[in-house]
Length: 412
Image (cartoon, rainbow, N blue to C red; front, side, top):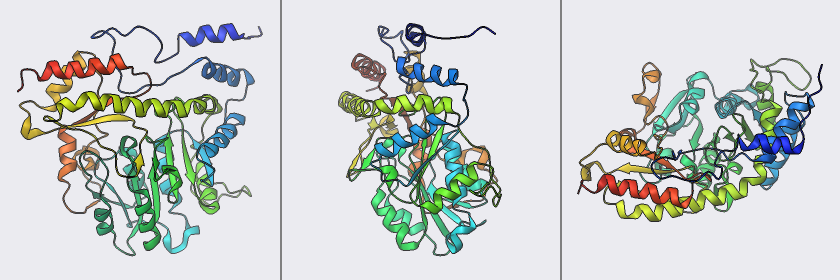
């Protein structure tokens, strides 16, 4: 067998073909401005190659190293980091964990309720349904895209509600301290979906450090592992349960006391994450800068759109720039605008799946709705977001604003 080796020059050469957000010149109207993406450099490629050449591809040394680095980034304020194969699996693990008999009367049983938002990423709600619990949908505010605390508290039924599962939508923070206090008061679980909010802080604390469990996704998110996800637990008991469900239902003594899964990550994913996390502070600051820069440009269009705003006491690492059409002020619809933007190479994405109750997958799912979900319906029909990831430059954002301006010039 011919021995295969790569030198540093080979790695750098190869990386030039893999780097996203590279230094290719931006050509307005020709270069597509993706709403999300990853920055991959030669160090990232080097880690991937080193992992491949080591011959150890399954969970191993890089997984341990990334978990260590993430705990340091989170100021050692989470008990544990458990890597898994995706952010969706992370949500499944977190919600499945609270069904465990180890939690006694607090455990989530079939028919119990879990409060979440109607506008959501499907696999956040799917994990609730897959554990035979009942999702309880509440509305969210326009502009912030997170729910009000009073709506959450009103939805709680003592003895029936067992958890609150909320996302920091596009990085914007819900009131983590108030939700944590609410969960402590009612003795229910708090799970934070942080899959698009890595780097966001609330009251100067990382959002992952509140409550019982939090989750990350690394599929072209704030940092990338290609895919991969993680669960952060804030107690030893929860950590043990998560790790057991992750790995076939196996306990530390190698007995099988749970009906588990195999949701383990690969060390290739962790190798990429181990170099990506070194750039995380830079990525977070670039997202914040891009958001502010684009927000300043978009102010001239506030007669047409509800523009985003950070929640009080939060410092979001924005995943995107959400926009909602003021339907009463517009002579056009979202599809017309998005088709124009995309035709002019300005990439867009809808806000997750919109109101999930409008999606066919949930037609026969048991759920409860607390109050009106008027804003959720508006988001389904009138909201989308633009990119602010680090690969986007000032000229790109200037062109975005120019494209909006051109579209709107005959709409007055």
